[in-house]
Image (cartoon, rainbow, N blue to C red; front, side, top):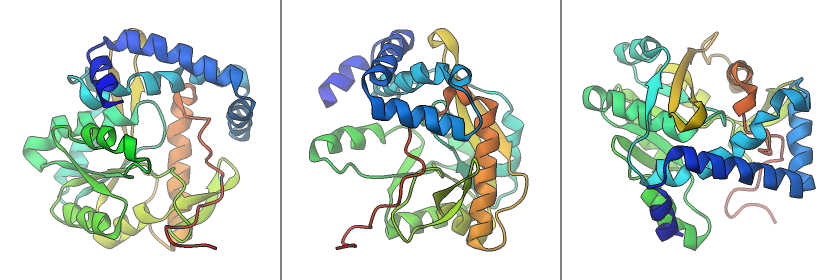
Length: 280
């Protein structure tokens, strides 16, 4: 698998996106479960299929572009409003970057690291180690990108994130992943309860860092990406339940900017799994 990804990493982004779009539609057409979840979750957010139809191909493009993003040369990525992120760094309190499954979240971290690494140090990113042994070398290689400091989803990883924030550096994570039981709280997401990680709120409350919402827009014809930055409407204060509800509202606002590139097939409303060693 690693060899295949290395070969594909040299293919032009436009070609990878064309192949990925076809793959996205193939999976959508042959998998009733996948198709049903996609349509139902889009409907939960108030969208008919015609409004989010392009997301079918974009989900495939997300997969197709991975070899280039993980192992290939850097891709073109511009910032739509760089001053939004610049202000956060200049505050000197650390920056917590929250990126949902919208557009290309892989390129967002790489673009931020490339722009701010020299002045503010590497970007610390949270990742979940591969559960399947044959995937481990590929995942490990994908995280060794310039300016990125990957940390695992463990207590040691959380400590590294807190340390980075207190040093005035940035930390990035995907807040709309369903965490294991005991590591989240139920909060509305497009009007339906979703088990939501509390880690982001804990980091913000414990360190007093700046919080920014980020997403990477996938540009047409393989021209690259455009990174967008937004501020929260209100700080992640109050109880953890109040904070994660406010965070989910921010995610909703971001997704509504471009629902055509959201990962509607992600099982956002699934129950949390038992942590390792838990359950019966």
